Image (cartoon, rainbow, N blue to C red; front, side, top):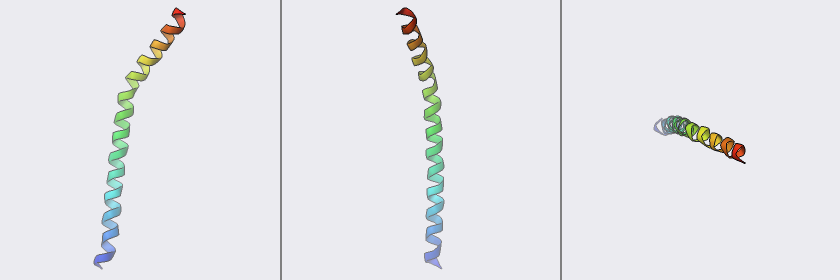
Amino acid sequence: MEVSTVPEVGSLEIESRSVDIELAVNKASDAMKPLEIIAMSILTQDSFSN
């Protein structure tokens, strides 16, 4: 009985970790959005100045 409970706990841990990773990725992409907007505005300015 004890052995069968170990994989269940492990899979729950893995699930919660993957959710944490997903949240971290979402936060990172949200942080990157302003940088992308800045980069796009710089690129468009460069193309206009040329």
